Length: 380
Image (tube, rainbow, N blue to C red; front, top):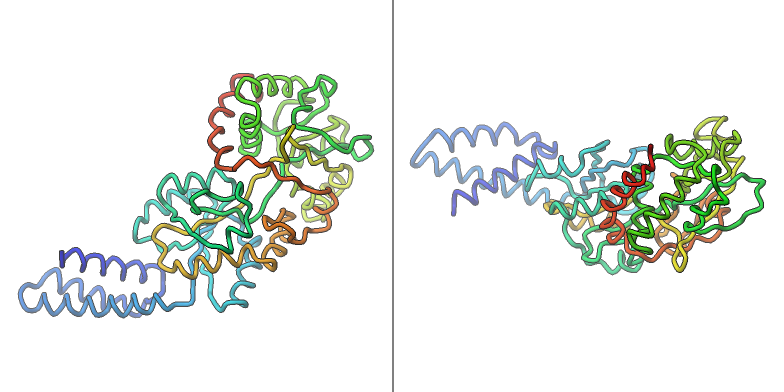
């Protein structure tokens, strides 16, 4: 039992040193480890005692450290203003590790020695995956529950949405149309007039999975076949290509994400994209008897978070009025907190009525949605 405790202490020390918090102790740890491993009897006891003392010093120092370690797949430029504001507000430093992909694999490989406190990513499916792999822990926070609608957070509190993007319809700005349902996209009157990216893209499998939640697999298959028949071109490209092709006269409607409009109209994507953004208008489609499908960026507290208290503080800050407004301006996303200010470009789209189907339920239908995409040859 004692050896196991000492092993745990050393692993804890190694984790702290590895992450760069206590480099001055590194040489002492290595020397003590060598003594403990190569000597016997009295010297071994002394070495182990010294190791334990250093471990206590490190753990105590870490417990009081005003810092939190963030692993994120979100571009640093998007979230840095939030992290800077958090530090100014709380004095807590955020150490950021950017991972373009492989977040779950990285944290799983680090195991209980992982320095990660917060895991931040986009797409509800990725958050559900983190939970399913046992990499998160439930957080029971009144602040988070009051700020984040129930359908946008895990039922057990393992993850919470921080911002939203809606799956909307772009239309030619001169078209006499101001509303549409998702169901209407399969109406033959739109034959040869709709553009969309590949059906297997996560943006679309999420929408199709939500359709399954509302109508079942059989009805969704019929709808997908009808939507495919209405395509003006092969399902391909990106969401901004939909706007480009509307302006270019290839299609009248395009299924795409809301935040791209802000990126285009603001000129952040260049002058060509500004022309595309100004050549379209945004419709907020709904399901019959439901709302507009949204996906999210979100975060969870890591299972082995060494700074759990600070991690919860960061999560709670990210749903504050201040942070939600920063989110809205940084990437033209929707805040998750009801009543939080919108960017003027996003506000011009009209009132967003979020669909009530829980994101976790939508994720559960994604495999079926992907299978239907192949079955109807949507991307062929």
